Image (cartoon, rainbow, N blue to C red; front, side, top):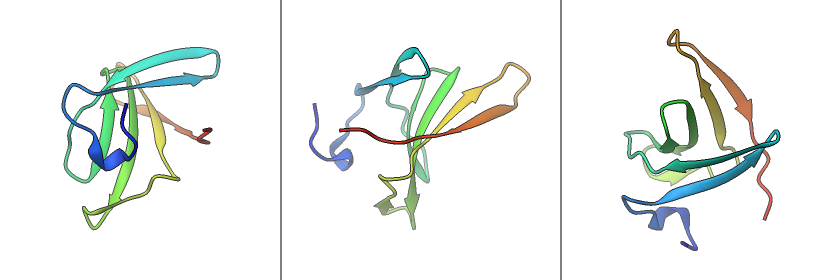
Length: 78
């Protein structure tokens, strides 16, 4: 468990309870955002200027087989 999102290391994962689904997504390092993805779901925090993390505005993308996606807005709970 990490205290700050910037402390995430390879091998980390995130647990998400959303819309009666339970997702466990592995960390997927990418340029421009912090991502947790299993190639069906992609949970992201965008980076401002590749430095500052927009922690209060994460997005959950449902990745479809045709290459398109559905964006789901997120509300974080402690």
